[in-house]
Image (cartoon, rainbow, N blue to C red):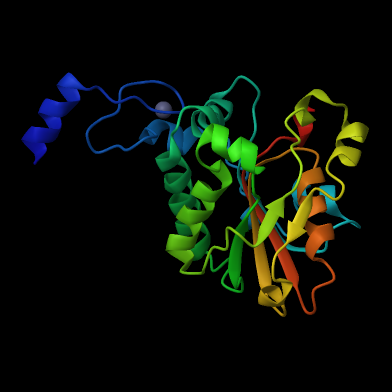
Length: 231
Ligand SMILES: [Zn+2]
């Protein structure tokens, strides 16, 4: 098998999705150097972090986690770009497995009942072919052994122009954008909302507005990257 892998890596060199350097045969998608040196948030080690602060007074988050601090034009942006626009669904699953293993070793998120990836609008889903947040959620769900519900919340309107708008406009833009199917499934459940990147927090806030009146519901949030400082 090693010989075959060596042979294949000669014909089909594989590259790190973060830094672009050649991968060694024992590496998969992200090189070991990047795994060590990428800007990890380490938010799971802090009692209060910047995502908690962003949502303070708005969304009563139990856990607020992300793997990386987003850096414009950096390796994290490259990872997100590959996941969203280059059909790298496996990268989302890889990142989900990676982070869930890290959190599980610290007994974090043991109290979560189920995962809900932030949905795309059906037109965007058709265009892209997959939901990048769902890939990440799938990877998390595999390790945590908790169900992922991907048809529970629907996105009613497209917000593709969101990134072009200013912060205040973005808040208005996502009001009432989601709809919940069968809310009773979520009664007395601790829900982990899964997003790819958190920026202003408007999307998570809108999702919370949709589910907050469900009896006994609790909420946490997790993302690959947190980008608020850059906007
Ligand atoms: Zn790398």
